[in-house]
Image 1: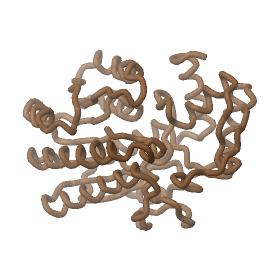
Image 2: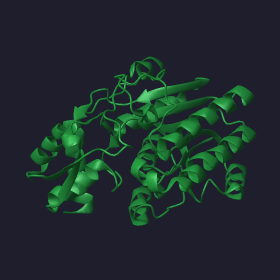
Image 3: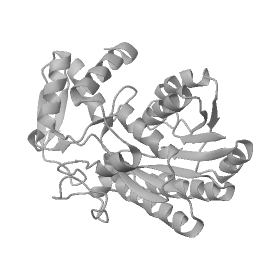
Amino acid sequence: MAILVTGAAGFIGSTLSEALLARGDEVVGVDNFNDYYDPARKRANVEPLLKTAGFSLAEGDFRDTAFLDHLFETHDIKRIAHLGAMGSVRYSVKNPAIYVDVNMVGTANLLERAHGVGVENFVFASTSSVYGQTDKIPFVETDSTDRPLAMYPASKKAGEVMGHAYHNMQGMNFTALRFFNVYGPKGRPDMMPWIVLESLLHDREITLFDNGEMRRDWTYVSDIVAGVVAAIDKPLGYEVINIGRGQPILMTEFLDLMEELTGRKPRIKAVPAPASEPKATFALVDKARSLLDYDPQTTVREGLSRFVDWYTREVGR
């Protein structure tokens, strides 16, 4: 019996695969190594996995139905962690079509194959961005999520809704996990921690929205992965669950921490926030604690320190 991890060469997917392999699971990883960011970074992420017993890599695209049919014929897949997606709110503003293709059509393809072979549990990586612009703080799973600010969260909301359809029609166990501002080692180059760190190390200007008055609920990758593993292990019918730290900080505080960790003074360019950016993200994680025994451990200071150490060691100054 195997666990399928899509996006297995990515930031969260490779970290999840490591955690599953460490406890003795058989993992089938899927990735298409697209060029949204340097594929060499993804190759580096997956290289240690290829040397680990219990891991196999299927290089391909879950939009390709023939590829998926062969994958499910070849492997006895009983649980799925669907992390593979086109990410980034800002990229989706200018490139909406690929978000429909990958995040909606690709997810529908995977759900249909999962139903066809009787997968026991389907865990879907959603996003806190589905909450949009709201004055209700913290974000609760029962809040309205029908006014997304860009195509990325719209496509992720569609995935949650399709999952409910398969639960209703086919009795599929489907858990959507709404991730909050994930960061840590192996993070993507388009994400804020990476951008800020590189800008500090190379004395580049940092664009800061709304004078740093925006708040983000930074959640360290190992805490996110702990939530995913718990969800994989516990079929719940149909559920939507926040996976965050639950302790948002101002972006000015974030920059202060990065300055402290690097010893570099940021050069700030203050601009108004675009319409795609919410004023805050803030997870209420009571449901995750109750259903998944979720208990995030890593403070933002600790997590950023680990990220800076990893970047210095693996990427270079």
